Length: 406
Image (tube, rainbow, N blue to C red; front, side, top):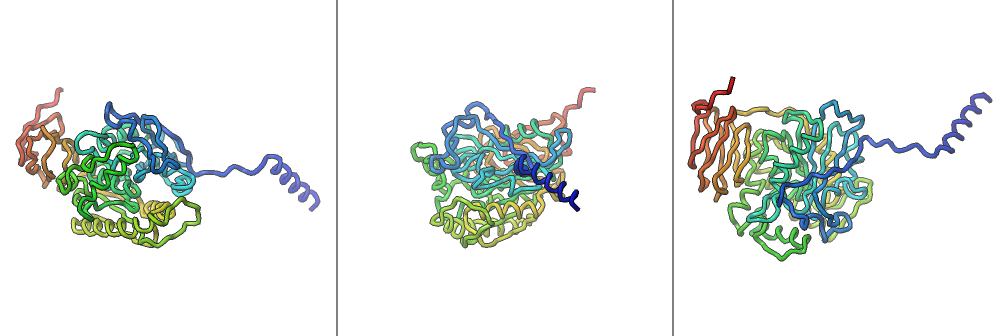
């Protein structure tokens, strides 16, 4: 017994000399830069004067936080979650020790989490000029992630999520690239931009104030009630997610706590969640169900703060962001105002930006493109492209494609 007590004493003394054992995080947090294409995201749009405490303006290029899982091995392939921040926030928000606390919130997550800069750009190519956040994500951010990190290739293993404005971004970008994202998670998201007349135009004031720019109500979404705003409204575009799994969560305006301190403002966070986010979520879910989308909805108590957002992200992870999804559906629709894009192996590029919301639809071998006010070039694979006026109907099996060189 004396020998045992002596050994215990020696262990305790050694522990006191060495100090407390380091906390074992279930992940490793790092930071990278993701430079935009020339002119895509001018530096003046980075950061927020409205929330300088947590998202101070900084010189470009845009950056991203990356959370690598426990035991990360670059020779293995991992699932991917792109996690978007809200308005007046930035790439640091989800990893902030007071806000997202991502290493705690997503403890044990099996994949790579990338948290890119979104400033207050609404994840949209602005109406006429200005930043092009939509193109930045589709043309730069996603390819850069795939270049830097070993990501599993199937769409099942790619998810996108976001809170508040980031929920809008997740819903919209998920529909712009449905063949890439298998699941999306909307965390107290602004997913119906038609709750009241002029709502998209009012939203445009926030990034302009953040960047100390003159107010222009049409800067982001164009004229009040116009097609460009409709073509970026997730509720209007619900059918774009017909083969995607969707998770939606929203609070009801009643404050909650998850046991951690958070930085909130009850004067704004209560009405924002109860009067804006909850009705927007209800409207969005109705549209998803009408379009027969696989949606899980979790309304609950909570306000527009990180006590709520952290819980909702944990719930989305528990829901399973990487469950099986269809790989190559032969029947789908996609409504868009984009001048170019790719849908399930079909590329499209209009000669001029569409002047209305355009429906592109496939049913077996038939591909239809609605009226766009412009001809379109369709790229069908195997080096095959056709240029047709709109509206158009193309028989995919009847298109003559050049033979591959032997």
